[in-house]
Length: 504
Length: 98
Image (tube, rainbow over the protein chains, first blue to last red):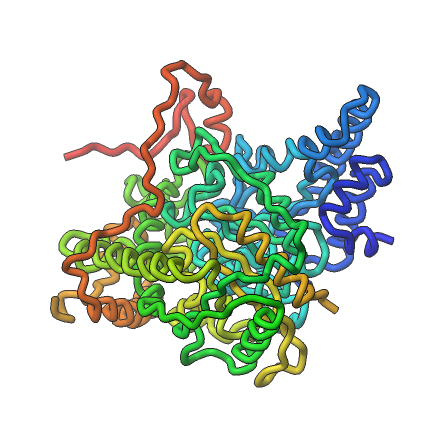
């Protein structure tokens, strides 16, 4: 019973709840039952906090509000807009503040932190009738690519629980992939939503930088952070994105432009005549041959359906890793300076009598190894005498990477690449080698540095190397800045041709 | 810039970051960070003499807020998560500058 409800799309759920065919309460119960049956620290490890009480209360509020609107005779169209996510269960990455609900960022630093305010996008979800079922696991402060840097427990890939779901938004990816919630929210700074979407066989969407408010998203790298959702299909991703996008005066980098909806009426035909750029640098060394074959096969299918494939060169692609691993740690070292044991969060060493010992001990005890590495790297890159050689240089290389995209978009409408060069790897395989973990981000970093919208969707599954189980492969589509509707329409056509995946 | 100028002194940088580290952590991180910095040095292969830096991808003209008083977080709520407080304020160990 609960499995059936969890198999429905978010748009079907919302339509059913608006029409009264199904109650928000029954949907919340189905999601909570799925979580109780499949999740837990020793199981999938998707959630850090499940808010059963809050979810049931929110669902009742939605049901009551809709009953009142129906009694008033409010039109279907008005309800469809105001209650776009009526009764839809949503899991939220534990990097977003939720008023009255513990928000840890998967760090001991915030283990007991209960925020006094909602992130802007959390408020928008509630306003649109969504029901937040809990907070999901992640790499500590969103730093990592496997969710193994969680201070509490790792998340596991539902396709093969000996493997990683990717990261840093791994818990939110697992929630949708295992159908524990209909939608989820993650944050994507360098690929933290697109890569786990690829590794778990679902859709992950990163908007243009500045399209969605970051207010209440605990900051990692402020010039790169984006609020990015996961969904089981492209239309659901567009549904949640349009519910949360748009201006917010609390985020000075959030642009004041109208949010246009995608038009999916052309279906698979929307691929006809689309010029798809295929940059050769994304198919370079280090890529699993099975992943390459899956992507090539998908592209050939799109070509047969009427797309035009255009071979491209984007020569600065591989430098994205080095540039990113200067810029992101530099920004993180500054952002994480706020964790000082004074205003909220963990406090250690106050008994030693000096404020510097209070800072030093608090940060030693509160941060895990990867966060410490990045703070050190960033502090070094910004320290006196090194700024030009590291931060300044990386900002210039960021310009070169943007120019690669600008030139490509003179000839093509969308750029297609693998999302991750490899399918899900074994838990523990890369944890002792930070650089190997960073290199896994090669395909997603350039679009982040250029601030462009990008989406990952599954091409199918592969059995590669040591893998006994079938593992999903993701195709990344990168669009022009602020042209999200066109990207969604192309992605929907691609999905119509390739199909969606369902975790066995 | 020569390699020796780029070598990271983990202990010194940790002090700048107000981050205490155990001897073990220093021993593990020193070579890890050195490897990452070696990798980052590949940026030097690119000639960027005539390239302008990108600090932000969206040219944002910082919007001005309306000149109107708004309620802040009530003091009690702001202090509710403080690990130590005294007289309605955050409490810290005594420190004297200079």
